[in-house]
Image (tube, rainbow over all chains, first blue to last red; front, side, top):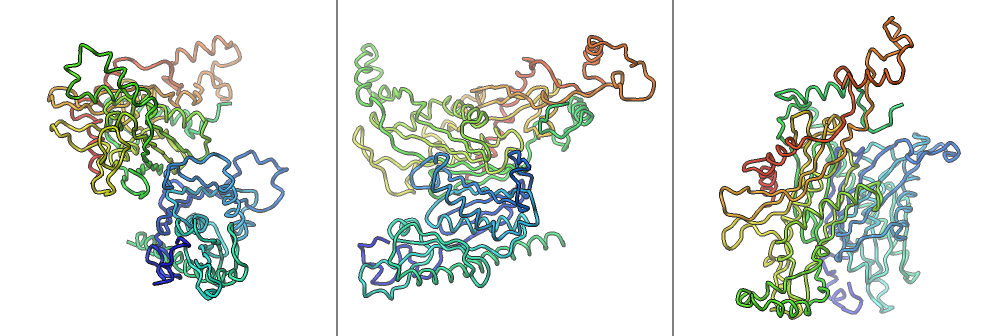
Length: 255
Length: 368
C-alpha cells in the first residue's frame, strides 16, 4: 500500500480488497511427498512453500564424539528459494545472508519447541522450497515447517504459527488510533515497516519476533498484539488442516 | 571389503534379478512388460509467476518441479549482422527477397538464449550430477532449431528462456527421465506474450494474457504436426533384452544403461518416422560398483572338506573366477553394449506407435 496514495483512508480497504485484520487465502496439504519422512505444502495468498522433513537420523557429516556434547537432537534448516519464485528470475547465490538468517531463526524456533531430548545425538533436517513469494516469507516458512513436522511425527510441545503485521500507513500524528495491518503481501512489505511474529500454543508464547524496518516505538505494542491475535487465528487454521488430514487417513484405513 | 554403493542387495539377490531379467519372455520384479511405464502424477500451470510450470511425481516418491520464465534480452551485435549478411548474398537476392527477415535470424550464439538450472537438495551447484544433467537436457533442447525462430523477436531483441528445475525429493534413483519429462511438460504449457510492435522498433507486448501465444503451438497454420519439446528416456539392457523406465532394483543389475533424447519431427509424410534421435549417451550403470559373489570352490571359510585346501595361487583364483563368467555367482558386468542392442533401443523409441510417441501423447494429454 503506497504511502502517498490515500485510498486506504477513504474506504479502509487495501489494494487486494482486504480490511486491516483479514488474512489472505490460506491453503495447506499434508503428506504431499511419499519419499520424505514428513512433507507439507502451504500457501498464504501467493506465497507458496513446500517443506520436507527427514529425520530424526544420524548426523551426516561424520559427527565425531567431540562435537555431540549435548544430549539433544539438532534441528537443521535449509531454505531453497527457487529462481522463478519472484517477479524477475533471480538465481540465489549460496550463502545469501538473508536466507542464512531465516534458516537460523527457524532452526532456533523449532529447537525450543520440539522435544529434542527424546532423540539425543541425531539430526532433524528441514528442507524448505520457496515456489512463489509474495510477502510474509518467514511466517509462511514457519507455518509450513510446523505442518511438515507434524506429518513426520516429530513430537512438539505445540503448533508454531506465525504472521506479519505492519504499522498503519499514515504519516499524520493524530491518526495514531489507526489499526495495524495484518498479513502483508509483497507490495505492502516493500512500502510499510513490518514485523514477523511467531508464537506457540494457545496462549501465544512468542518464539520469533523479527523486525528489519524502523517504526515509532509507540506503535509497537499495538502491532504485536494484533500479530498475536493473527497467530491465534492461523493456529486454528493449521489445527483444522491437521484434523482433516487425520480424519482422511483414519477413514481410508477403516474401509 | 566391498565398496559401499548405496545398493543394499546381496550378490545372491543381484544374480536372481539378473537371471529373471535375461529370460525370454522376461520377468520384471513388478510384473511390467518391457515397454510399460510406471504410472505417474503430473500437473501443469501451478505457479502463477512463471510463463510455464509443471510438476511430476514418480511412484517411487521422487518429485520434480519445473518453472519456465522468459525475459526480453538485447541481441548482441543486433542490427549490424543483418546488413553484412544480406549484402554478401548477391546471387540469392531473389530467393531472400520476400522473406528478408529470414537472413536476419542469423542469431549467432543462440544457444545462450536458453539457460537450464538444476537444483538437487543436498548437492552444490558445481557437483557433477547437476552439471551433467543440465548439459544433457540443454543439448537435447538446442537440437531443435525451430525454437530459435520462436524466441526471435526482431533483429535487436530476443527472448531468453530460463528453465529452473527443482528436484524436490532426494535423488533415490537416477533423476534424468523425471527431470526431462517435467521439463517437456513445462515447456508445453509455456506461453509468451503476443507482440504488438512492428519490425525493429522496441518490442511492445499485449497486456492481455489471454492473447499470449504458446511457445510450442499445438498445430501449425499449414496443418503439419506441431513441434514438441524433446524428451530423454532411460533405457537399460540385460543380455539381449531391453527395458524402459527401469526401477532402482533393475538398474542395479543392468548390463548397460543408455539415455536417449528424441524430439518430434514436423513432417506430414506418413512414411517418415515421427520422432528423430538427437542425442544418445551411455550412463555408467550402478551394477559396475557392486561386489561379486564368492563361488563355492573359492570359499575357504566353509568347513566341509572341499578341494580348497591352500594350493590355489592368485593366478589360480583369477582363472577360476574367469572361467565361471558369472554363471554360478554374481559378477559385475564388464564391457560395453552391442551395437545391435543399441539399434533396437533406438528403433523401439522412434518408430511409429513406439515408446517415444506413447510418452509424448501421454504428456500432451495432461495439458488441458
